[in-house]
Amino acid sequence: MFVGNVINNPKTYFMKTGIIIPCYNEENRLNENAFIEFVNNNKDYHLCFVNDGSRDGTLKMLIRMKSKATNDISVVDVKKNVGKASAVRAGVRYLYNREDISHIGFIDADLSTDFNDFKDLVKTLKSDNKLSLVFGSRNCGGKGIVRNNFRGFISNLVKAMILFVVGLPIRDTQCGAKVFTRTIVPVIYGESFVSRWLFDVEIFLRLKRYLGKENVMRHILEQPLMRWEHVDDSKLGWVDALKIPGRLVQIWSHYVVKPSFNLVSPSKHVYPTVEVLQTPQMSIAA
Image: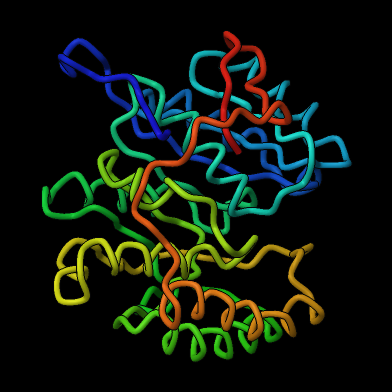
């Protein structure tokens, strides 16, 4: 069951926005100084790094970062690689059970979306009580968007297929910068995702089903990013790209053709392969 501690009096807590950073073999791409500087200068944020079964020195690096900002950084260690969808979900479950977290979001470990843009997303979300999700867009006019040719080709191809599956006027579902209100979290993350990597598509399909096609766009907002830059050493290659159409068909079948997604809280199963490091022990379902 997706249960968090009830906050009877939120004013007694210094409420923060939790940012999840999923990491898989990111030792060479993590900008340690940038993350430490951010939490030192922004005490209304908490960083939650999720190590997704990395085989390099990522975990050691995350532990070192946490030692420099013990109260502002958490590390969730998933022992076996499970993919970005489950890694983000593990981080969400941890943050949701913290009493000091009011909003939860995620960004990519390479900081292709910078902190200034992410803070703008949070500001927009907090400014309108009707919104449940604000997400960045690389296709809405931002002037600092830089892609390489391969990523641009793949992005346009995937975008066309996703628009058909989602059936909503969204220009960029796959941007790795999104922030949610706490109240919508059980709807989006209550059940495991079908896809390891295309879970952003599932997020919008879940919201569409929960809020209704006519209402969903009133509660989500696509906001242009002022800066986004592809960082080399991406894990998306031609082989992965060729699998995307099949994965989208699987998602389409699951949510649209023969809907099997139920808006229920997940079970209370405990998975021993997930651990929160250097904090009081607690169990988290991956």
